[in-house]
Amino acid sequence: MIKYPLSTLALILNMVVALLPYCWWTYSVGGIIKIDDSLFLLNIYFEGQYLYISNFINMILFAFRFYVIAVSLYFLYLILRRGEKRNYLLIAWASLFYILDPVIIYIIFNYILSHFIQGVTYPFFIIGQESVEFTDSGYQITMLIQSYPTFTYWFSLAVGIINLISRFLKKY
Image (cartoon, rainbow, N blue to C red):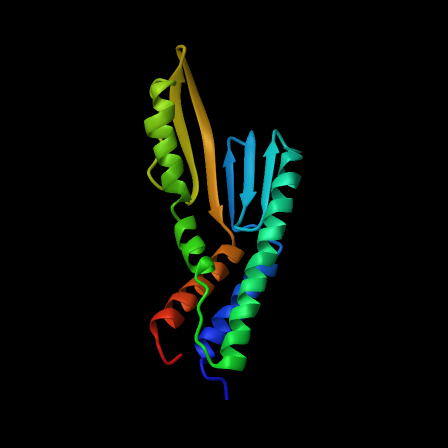
């Protein structure tokens, strides 16, 4: 019998999330810049062309992916062999804070870029698509902003919630 079944499940699911080769969220600014990202993967496109700086970043994220797997395996070993309860909450916090990305973009547009470009107004929270309008040098500019979570993000968020629950339930 497994002593801490929910914590064991959470650690196994952490490894599943780390092994998934998919992005969590997709952003696009007028189709000019498109970013597909997750905690372990980043793809950047400029005018439809893949930017190779993403390869360098992805090598670092690939190493990070295996760090998460190694820590999860070690904690799993401690639970199964020694009976010590351990929780690894990285996926929990990362998936919860990921929902703040649209809010961070809002702050960048409305409080930083607005000092350089007149009339920038960006919606507070975008999931889906919105048109953003601003005026620069007398020209009205409209951009279509798209921000979508993927199924992988929702799965990661569910795993994160399981991690948090297992952290607070002492017997599980």
